[in-house]
Image (tube, rainbow, N blue to C red; front, side, top):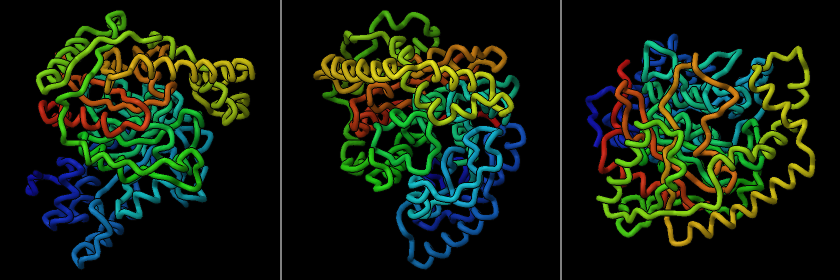
Length: 465
C-alpha cells in the first residue's frame, strides 16, 4: 500500500489513485507535486513539448471538489497522465514530433484522450516523440532528444518513438502516460528507461485522433512504472470505438480476473540459442536470471523452435515504409521541409515499394502468423530481452540500425507484448525482459509480468535526480 506521507510524485499510479479515493491525497497535491518536478527537471530532461500547467491545476481543483462531495466518476478520478505528441487534444498543438507541424492545432480530441478525461484523469501535457514516430532510439534532430534520466552526465538514448513519455514517467514527472507502438515504440522506452510498457494487439485500443505512421501496425499503449499500473491504464483506454473500424467487435479488456494467479502451470518459452548472438552479456545475464525467477515461481520453461529469425521480421519493412510514405511522402519529397535526415530517408524508402512488394509482404506476414501460431501451440508466452543492450550514448547512435530486433515481430504478427525491468548494468542502467503472447492475450502477459514483479524489486528503483 502507499505511504501517503510520501511525495505523491514518487508513488505508483495505483497507490496514488487509492490515496485520492480514500481522501488521504488530494488531486491538487498530486498535480502540484508533478508540476514541481517538471519545473525542476524539465530544463534538463526535455520530456515535454507542452505542459498544461494552468489547465491541470483547474482540473485538479474540480476533481478535488467532486471527490470530496461524493461525486467521483471512477477510481482514476484526479490521477495525472501525459500524452505522446501524436495524440490530438482539441485546441492544442499536435506536432507529431515534426518541426514542419509546429502550428498544427488539433480540431478534435482523440478517443484515447476522451476516455481518460471522461474517467476524471488530468492531462499534464504532451511529450516528445521521434518525428512521425519513425525511429526506435528516441532521437529528434530538430525538436531535440529527451535526456534519459538514468545517466545525468552522459546523454543516452531514451528509446523511441515514445521518448518523452518514457522520460517523464521514469523521472517521476508523471505517474504514467500513453505511447504508441508500431515496431517497439512503447517497449523500447520502457527498456531504456526502466519502465513497464504494454504493446497491445491491433484493435484493442482506438487510434482515432492519433497521428498515424502505419495504419496496419499502429497500437497505442500504456507506459507505467508497474504491471499493476499498466493493467489499470490498459483497462481505461481499451474497448470498441465506432470511429475506429479496427476496434469493432473487440470486447473491452478485463485483465483483473487473472492478474494475481501467478505463473504456476504456465509454459513459457525461452528464445532459441542462436538468438543470443549479438546481445550484451549483462542483458543475457538478466534474462537468464529472470527465467530462473519465473521457474521458481512455478512456470515451466521450455525450448521453442521458431519458423523465423527475429532479424527476418526487422527486414520486412515494406509495410511500414509504404504506409509511412502514403501519410508523409509529399512532405518528405519537399527539400525545404524541416525533416530530420534519418526520418526523411525512412519515409522516402516507401516510394520504392511497389504494389507487388507491399501485397507480397502482407501475404508473407499472414503465412508467418500461421507458422508462429503453430510453433506456440501449448506455450503461453515467448520470453526474450526487450533490447540487445542498455541505453547507449547518443554520440554512438547509428540511425541506420534500429534497436527493434526483439520487438518488431510482435507488431508484424499481431501479437501483444509486455516489457519490464529485470536488472541493471554495473553502471546503473536498466535492463529489460519482454513477454510476448498471442494476439488479444494481454491478460496473460500482464499476469506473467505481475508474478515477476511480485518476486523482484527492479521496478521499484528510480533514477537519482
